[in-house]
Length: 306
Image 1 (cartoon, rainbow, N blue to C red):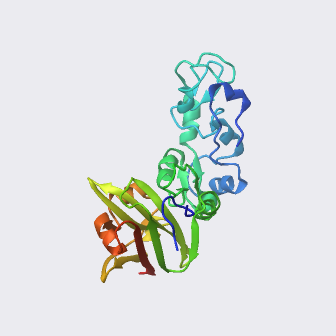
Image 2 (image 1 turned 180 degrees about the vertical axis):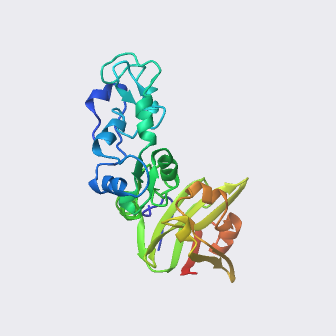
Image 3 (image 1 turned 90 degrees about the vertical axis):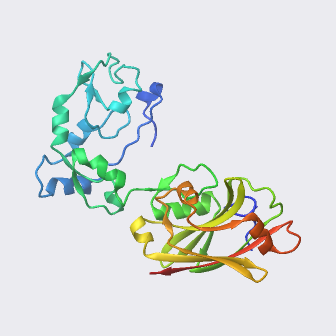
């Protein structure tokens, strides 16, 4: 079994008070003093966001900031809309029936606030109106990335440095330095082409990381192999690079040249768009030579800056 692949060979604690609701707190992170300072000293209009206001706007169940509509129980305890639907209409603080009471005063305070993006610790310097902050964070270029490993349903997220270590330590993915590569993929029974990812290799090149995927699947009824490259970074930076892939044998070869897709695009989206080198099984076996009973593909490639 090859590291990072399957069939190929390559030469915060939960809060006890809310445990009975099955909801774990998930603080989005506003504990750092610099973030509050930047919001309080910015030149825009609005109420300076201090510790006390942050505490008022934190949902007591999930610890995320609450956005209108903000609900409260008859005793004044507030919680966010998502958590209200999960606590069986019972206040998690005093157990009073929640009903449909809105905390309009707190909603007005929220609308007057300006806050730093939650990804400020990764480099975002935006100061945002409270109501527009959530929309910005959904598309912030500094937001966390999903794990690019496609051989398993991995839910890990993180910045690039964290994900590189995660791929190496938790998925046993091979890491290589250099902008050129020459990989050999071998499969004993090529007649079995199941939808699967068999190989992921990461290359350190130009100070960035690139993921080389190689896998088998079907286009309609036709079994194919596909190789493609993804860039571990944002779409804007991915467009600064190009790559080529080449596979061949018996005096023939197929070549592909393209732009690596960012890992912001899911593995499935890239594969289903057929944005890579595609080799039909019969052609792959022809390239392999011999009696066509074993797949032996050599994929060469190069990455360069535009």
